[in-house]
Each structure stands twice: as structure tokens, then as C-alpha cells.
Length: 245
Image (spheres, rainbow, N blue to C red):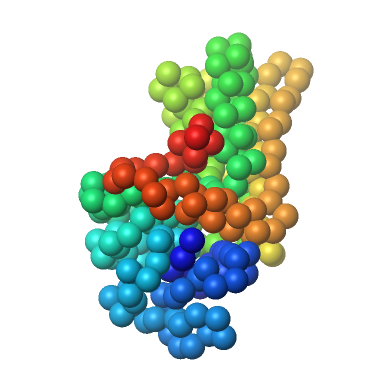
């Protein structure tokens, strides 16, 4: 598998480090230049996409729209925090190329989402309040994290759409409503990523927690997604599709 990495931040470098020798045939980053193993281009237009099987995006939300418009080969999107306009461009791109997109590339987090959905179906109508707490390093730009929102969406869907998101209680002098999913974000230090879902009932609390100890888990997931999507027909794919295959 030949790969172009779009964005050489922490995750992009982790993907490059875990990829097999010779599989990274190029990268796109604002800091263009030569790398001992591959050439780094300033933009995707300068990169020969025909030399690769797949693009793995590890960039920034502001760069994904342009990537979706210019991509000519299968695309894996690891970036989060995109707005509606960018999502529309991704959807349009998936009509001509296969696009894999997930708010989190970790198999463990996607298992956590499934467990949260199951727990919501069992406990959501039995007086359990649901809260999500996420923690990341102090350089992360978006909050709440895309993963937190993915978990919240899994819970809301399992509730039949009856729950609503509450991000900040400081503006309200009132009791917590039974239809809320509270979502809180912590930023500090070098925390890679922690997500805890709390089901708080009468005299008992259930927690479902996932902790990422390094970015390698996301890089491994991105490489697995690239292998999965590179031979697929045009369409929009996610982690559930890969886990079912």
C-alpha cells in the first residue's frame, strides 16, 4: 500500500512512523521540504496522486474542504471539528472516490461507543443521568472533542432522539433535566485522550472509560482504515463498516 500523508502534525508523524518501509511516497504540509524517506509538498496540487493508493488526512479542519475537492484517490479522514460546509464537500467527494471518516480511529473508542449505546437502551429510561467527560492535551483546538460528540450521538440515537446536549451549566440556576447529556471538556498537559461516560443512578454510578496512552492507537487505526478503503467503490465509510468486514 502506497500512502500520501496530508498533515505532518503529531498524528501524521505517528502514521509515518508506523507505516512499513517505503509505503509513504509523499506528504503534504505547510513546512514543505525533503524528508530522508519521502518528499514533503506544500500543497496537494504539487503531489502526484497516481503514485499512491490512498491519502491519510491528519491535518486541520480548515484544510479538509480543499483536500476533499482535490482528492483523486481513496481518502481516510482522521481530522475532527469540521463545519457543515466541509462535511458537505466530503459527502460530495464520496460520490467519486471512497472516503473513510471517523471521529476516532481507535478500535477501543468505537467499542466504547457501542457499549454506551447498549447501556443507554438498558438504563436510559430507568432514572440514570448521562454525562460525558473528555480530557486532551493543552494544544487541542476543538472542544468538545469529535470523539465526545461521536459518543454523545451514539447515546442520543440509542435513546430514540429524546436526549439533548448541554455543554455549560454555569448560565443556568436550575436542576438538571432528565433529558440531558452533559458534555464537559478538560484541556491540560500532554493528555493524549480520555473519554468517560457516566451513568449516574440512585445510589449507584456506572462509568465506561477509554484512555489513550499514545497516538499509536490512532495511527494503527488510520492505517487499517486505509487498507480497508483503498479498493472500495465510491462511498462514505466509517469504523462500523470496517469492523463488520
